[in-house]
Amino acid sequence: MSKKSSQKRLLICTFLALASGFFGGYIGGQISVQAHSQNCQNQRWDLFKAGCKIAIAPGAMWQGSTTGIWTGSVLGAFFGGLVTRKE
Image 1 (cartoon, rainbow, N blue to C red):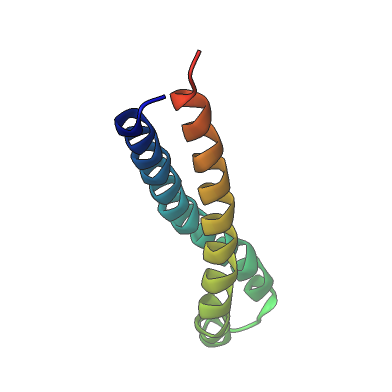
Image 2 (image 1 turned 180 degrees about the vertical axis):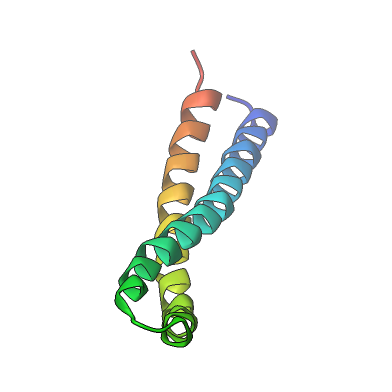
């Protein structure tokens, strides 16, 4: 494998890992916020429901996006390696 083709493979794998990591972070954050917001449905008054959602959103977003970034990056790099492997 030449130096140029290995650099091209590295760039493709890196791009796929970063792109899928960012996408996974966004999706993971959204899913986590929705899942944690279900706990706020037990509140009696609408004001408390809104306050509950505001209170849990940052932590849920952080937790979900961190998990999504890691998962997306690993899967993106794996599939990038599969796509660019030599026959």
